[in-house]
Length: 194
Length: 150
Image (cartoon, rainbow over all chains, first blue to last red; front, side, top):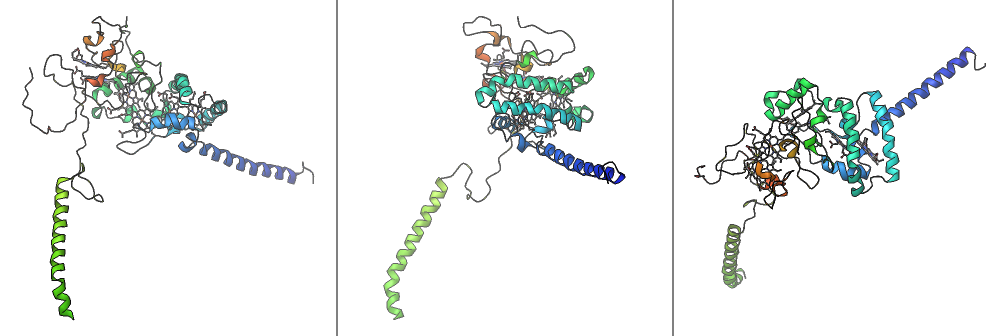
């Protein structure tokens, strides 16, 4: 009864199948576990800085009681994008070990860089994670302030993405970022600050 | 036996009544004069309802009542932070961005420094916007206001 007999082949295949199920299940369980807010703030780097600031904002507590948690904004929902983001996130483990941002001062001095990564990521996917919950299609512009609806109509016409205008909605903005330099405009009638 | 006790306690009885009455007066007057901010309510009951003071959005802005009045803020501001690191109001009200954001630019007076000379960026004296500008709620005034604008 060798490995290459019919029965042997079947056994190998069956064994492979069972192990596959176990690994796959385990893998997805780990993926699931690491996709909870509690996991994110298990690192004090995350809890002491960004989390504290986020609890003051509308995405933590609001009129309707719908909360957006860390992974809702930072981790893609589709499987393949999620895996890619998780692999990139192992970089965070390295910096955790190196203590790159283990004090408030270090965090603040790295903050602009971290924020820029996140802005670039969001812009590259047209703010996909925001649009998992928000959608221009389902906004009632009559119910918005005209400050909002005027800009949103412009955004639809020009294909702008949420993060281009809504930076700093969940955390404090980093030092060195000047919001007045950063509002998208269709025409080039910028007035320079001589 | 019963009778002797009774005659003895007549004095005690009236004394007790007197003392009880005194304490009752003391407590009731204390309750009237000392009152916490949550009103005259026992600690284990709910406090009086306070009105919610929701910030009002006034399309087109509020009218000004006199020359050089800092205009009232016609929109919500809790999202915009003013710190040493940055000023969230300038996202829309600065020279550079106000046209794009369709917002009024800060007044010309906001570019004059302590020495009376014009400054390039917003004057340090005008950095903390909410020192002079305030949003409004829709509450009715506690006292009637008879001031007429000029």
